[in-house]
Image 1: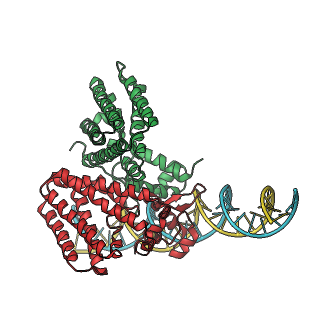
Image 2: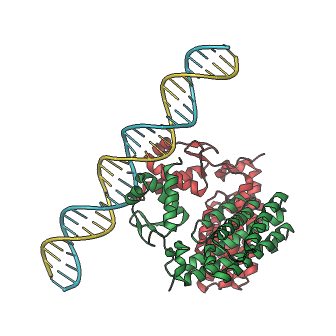
Image 3: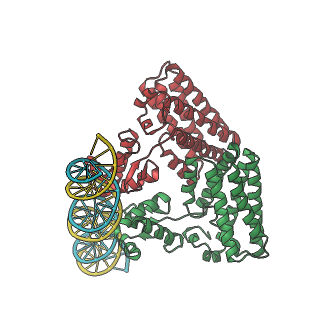
Length: 243
Length: 243
DNA sequence: CACATCTGTATTGCATGCAGTATTGCTTTT
DNA sequence: AAAAGCAATACTGCATGCAATACAGATGTG
């Protein structure tokens, strides 16, 4: 079994992102330690990690509070992802992608095509697309071969709603319209892959940067519709949802 | 007095960046706790923070090791800073900088001009320039008004050699040549400020991105000259210095 | 009736004890 | 003399005790 700290960290992060705590709520060590079946020490370590991740903030009087997020902060984090992924795509294009890299990318594209060719999307299709989308974005990050860049993207993706697939589950609700936006996003994947293959660095950078506009749009769309809280519970952490 | 954890964290980070530990060396809790006058608990918390910062890595057998850095990783981190600061400069330009912002920027420019107008640079001049340089870069980051971006830059700057002024102390050794490069860098500051004032977003972005090439050049220069270890002790953490 | 103060309670931050495990150095054998 | 095995040591990870502190509720006063 992994360490207590690792287990507590994963479970606690999950609870927060599932919206089990209210924004601004105080996180008391003892109840959480009891709930997760450990002592206070691993919980304290996990709090410290969550603070670095930005999910939790230290209270002036000691202890930690659940962080509140504004829609502006989310849009900011998505914009940062666009910038960093744009840099990654440019680096891949400039270095010249390997055959193996292009092969793996092609598998993602094929998988996306397969899902989107279906008439309607069930839950499994959506899950497949999300898995593929994460893989696609991760491939580019790793393909860039820049450790600091990979780190920066990873840290930014720890913020809720910032990761590539954070708002994708929403597409399920919006019926035909959702599928069309998914198709649009996947066409951008195709273009981006082509740009990298042709070593068109500037084009790849711009495409990757533009690509996050869809995530941003999804976020705005979701915040306007409280019923999407069921699909993306973490939106409970956003404090200016309706205002 | 601040908490034990905060104190231990600061002191320990300082020791590591001063090169007091060898790269790859194991960090034992008890000796450090004794050395810094606390118990093991705050030291453990500090280790955890240093791991997030990237100064220390978990050992597979438990505990932590001093992280080794390669010159490639340093160059990567500097490139990431260029990209992020480029984005920040572009945002400032696009939003239109306030009068107050331009005023503060101008003070930095004037201070740099003042220092560089002197015949030769003594220690105080160098310190003034470094302080001004940090202030200049920080102004742009804050002026961008993007919290996630500020966070990403801050986290990246925790890596040794990545911050704007990390390699500046080196300019002291290189005599007249060093002053000329400093002058060159400061001209870039002038151009960047002008671009932001004129709301030339693309130009500002490119200038900020290009600006880090000087830092990269300084890094390469320093790694070729072991005598610079006196000025930038953290270079002891670089493991491919001579090879 | 409102406000301030005081007391009891809960919680944090830190130190330390304990069990499990890796490591080191010595001894023994080939 | 080198290598393997074993024992002693040291270290990590976790639980818990304790003191200091913040918080809440009740009580007293203006």
